[in-house]
Length: 115
Length: 112
Image (cartoon, rainbow over all chains, first blue to last red; front, side):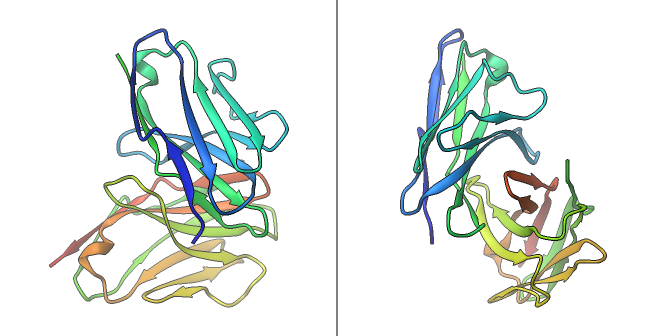
């Protein structure tokens, strides 16, 4: 099946710094990628939707200046958490919609810890 | 925004038995897609089964099948011959165009 790679799987950063998470579709073109945040024992919370070559669409309550999303190509989207704070610590997961169909595949997720 | 409801926070099934997980959704659209994803402790989201709303035939994937009732906006997942490896969180999801929503999830326990 289609593969979506997310990197890094775990990252620890200091408060106030920025951290970038990459999401790559390895064997298909992804016109749309989604970024989610998942709190312990909860469902996935959609943060934003990104389309290749255009600005991301953020969900209500998600700070676009804090969570920068770039979808520069059909196979890569990045999420940058800027000026990270301990409350940003969470599990972040991306997904990608296969261009030819409507199946959505997920990356492995990234654990972010801000100390 | 579309909503997806999973009314069963937890379910339990005996190994080799059958279990059904419920999911309802709210939409005014006629063309959309529905999914069931499995999330084991590793947190990897694994696609279990996919259903196109325009297809009346229920999707099946080996031991997994769905009961898709479009008029009732219901999309339940049946797991037959349950195995220990089926234990996980299961999420129902709705998508149309650039919108994708998840239910709250159902934690499935499989008893040996």
